[in-house]
Each structure stands twice: as C-alpha cells, then as structure tokens.
Amino acid sequence: MKRPVIVIDFDGHYSGLARSIRKLKIWSEVLPCHATLEEIAARKPLALIVAGDGAALTPELLSRGWPLLVLGQGVKLLARLTGGNPVEQGSIHSTELNSTDPLFADFPEAIELRGKVQAPPGFDVIAGTATEAIAVADKNRKLYGLEFHPAPQQTDILLANFLQGICGLQPNWSAGEYIDQAVEAIRVQVGKEKVICGLSGGVDSAVAAALVHRAVGDQLTCFFVDHGLLRQDEAGEVMKAFAGKGIKVLQIDARQRFLKALKGVADPEAKRKIIGQQFIREFEAAARQLGDAKFLVQGTVYADVIESGSGDAVAVKSHHNVGGLPEEMKFELCEPLRELFKDEVREVGLQLGLSEKIVWRQPFPGPGLGIRVLGEVTEERLNIVRHADAIVREEMAAAGLEREVWQYYAALPNVRSVGVKGGRRTYMELVAVRAVTSIDAMTAEWARLPWEVLERISRRILSEVDQVNRVVYDITPKPPGTIEWE
Ligand code: XMP
Image (cartoon, rainbow, N blue to C red):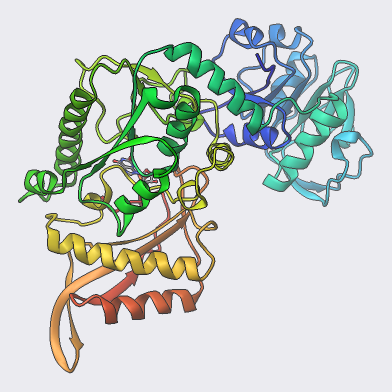
C-alpha cells in the first residue's frame, strides 16, 4: 500500500490540493472532514493537510504525531486547541511574507491577508507580527498553520516546501507504477471470468478498457452504442482508436431506435430519461450477446469518488452513465481508475498507447447531441447541430485552443429569427456557440475566445450550414447557467 499525504477536505472544495501533491509524485488521498481518526490512521499518512474551516482538527488528531499543515480559517482552531488566543476576525491588512522560514522558500510576492490570530505557546510566528500572526509553526512537531488560502501557484510552492523541504518526503508513485499495480489487481479480481465494458467515446472508459485489456486480454469485450446523438465522425474515430490494438469492440448501430424513442418529445428531463432507458435496453441486448460476463468495467475516476463524500463511490453514477443499469443485471464492478484524477487518467492512457485524440477528447455528455438540440430531436436538426459543432471544433483546433478550453460546442436552442440570406428574407434556426473553462465541471467560466476565432466560427457556420441565419456566443458562467443548455 502506498502511504499517502491525506488532504482533509470540505465538500470537495479542496481536492485540488491532492492533485497538486500528486504532481510532486507524492501519493495523496482526500478524506471528507467527518472522517474518523481510525479511517485516517488506517491509511498510515505521511502528513496531513487540513483546509477550510478546520472542523476536522481535534486534540486527538494533533496528538498522533503526524506532520500537519493547516490552511485557512482552521488556524484559529489550531491556535485554540494548542492554547493560543485567536483574535476576532474582520480586519484586512497587508503583510510582507519576508520570513526566512523554509515554508516560504521561493515564495514570490506580498499577499493580501484577512484576519489575525495569536500564536499559541510553543509556536513561532513565521509571518505577521507577534499579536497578529498569519502563519505559525511548531517546528519540533512539524505543525504549521497559514491563516489564508494561497493562490494556486503559491499553493504548489507551499506544498512542495512543506512536504519535501520540511517533512523530507520522497516521490513514491508514478503513472508507470500505477499501471503495473492496477494490472496485477485486475488479474487478481477477475481471475478467469469474462469482462464487458461499454465505451462512451470519452477518455475514462477508453483508458479503463485499455488497462483491463492489458491485464486480462481476450477476456474483455467492449461495446460501443452509436445512438445517433454523436458528433461528426465520432463513431468512426472511436472504432479506429481501438482497431489494431487487439481489443474486441462490438459496434451497435442503434440510431433509428433512439430517434424513434425520442419522436415528439421536447421536455429535457423526458429526453434524458428516454435516452437512458434506451441505452439500458441496448446494454442488456449486448450483454446477452456476449454471454456470461461476470464483471463490468466502469470508468469511475477519483472526482466521482470524492464527490460521493464517503470515500466510497456510488455503484453506478447515473449522470456518468446515461441513466444507470437495471437492478437485475448483477455485475461486479471493475473500476481501475477510481484513484486517479483526470490528468492522471490521460497520462496512463498515453502510456498504454492510446492516441492523443482519444486521450485529449473534451468531455461529452452521455445523452450527446440529444441535449444540445433543444426541443424535439429530429434527424434534420441533429444534422444542423452536428455540422455547426464540427466547424466549432475545427476552428478551435486550428487556433490551438483545444486543450486550453474545457468544453466547446454548438447548440441548437430552438429559436428561429428573421434575417436576409442571398438577398431574401429568411426565418431560420439560431446556433449558440458555447465554450467554457473549468477544472472539474462543477463551476465554469465562459471562455474569452479571441474575436478572430469567434469571427471565423460565425462566418463559416453562416455560410456552410444552410438552415442557420444567426450565431450567438453564450457568455453565461456556471453557476447560474450549466455547461449544457439542457
Ligand atoms: P452541466 O451541464 O450540468 O454539465 O454543467 C457538467 C458536465 O457534465 C456533462 N453532462 C453530462 N454527462 N450525462 C453525462 O454523462 C449527462 O446527462 C450529462 N449532463 C451534463 C457536461 O457535458 C459537463 O461536462
């Protein structure tokens, strides 16, 4: 077992700290703030990072001898628990972080600071003043507290200073080692049984399949449901990505069945449900065809595990899998990526020989274009949005923006407007272009795309997609909007 640095998290807000730590090649895990002392101790942590309000801090936790870094509000509690006197919060003042403490090595510039705390007995003030400390340390016990949340680049430096400089931790994991260990674990779990895996075209299921294939080879069969709600060339690209790798992939052409099921339905939730149910039917049929598989591969990643809050992923996340699987289908789950962050999944995928195209694919919802064609989903309207979307993707690629922007696509909002095209009055569809930046899709900002890119996208859609006479750019952040329009 890899011994981790444990990040004690509050509502998934600080899981990014674990990602930063793993970039140092030091294994890190996230536990919710209600984790018990036994749960923490069972993992034999090398150090603890406590972020947020510090509710996890208790005298027992402090007594275990684990090196500890407290970030933010929790420093007040740390001060109280160690006999200090936290001063009322409220004032804002600036202090130069000019300390020579190793925690601040390479720390670039002065920071705006909020609040104040009095150093507990036995602690050194390592930033701030004696009565208004903002960073304190008990160097013997390796207990550190910072009364603010550093900016992202500063966080990386601070974590490296604390974990490597102060705690002396060495790298203890790599993607290559992860693959070796995962392959071993899959072999032990699966034995000689058959395994099936539904490919969605997304990176998670693709990497999970590749990993399981490396472990058990032909015991794995994948299937890929073409529901007709895919982007241009998508089905072909997915099949091509797996061709020649020796992985069995069964393509199921379900386009007409999905269209038929969606006929006349305009309500977004009803559409999602229908797509989910149809997917289950296709899944059942495929599973029957594949015989007596005992295991089902799921591309559950660490973000899903953390989001569930308990440290145990829900068996099948409905959002993740277009509606979940029927109760009576009893599979044991094989989830080889459940400890990895998205960027690590990509690294593992590349090391397993998957193409950049698959590995860097932008997230795409299970219900596909079905929730980007607002109102009734028809073949004609799917073709319009598919064509416009292909233009958006081509121009983003041409501008080299594919990896900077989290998601970018065209939606068909079911709005018609008046215009002129070819000297004639038109009354045609409107296309909305959406591009967002995000770290985890929980929040998002609209992407500040260069005008020239937007201009090219608009001009091309208007001239190449016959049924469209107006293009708008969506400048809504999440919240209050969502990334998708439905
Ligand atoms: P929203 O629109 O909720 O999307 O901000 C957050 C992320 O999830 C994707 N998404 C879905 N993925 N099934 C999926 O598998 C769905 O029903 C679904 N709805 C949204 C969306 O593309 C974004 O990445």
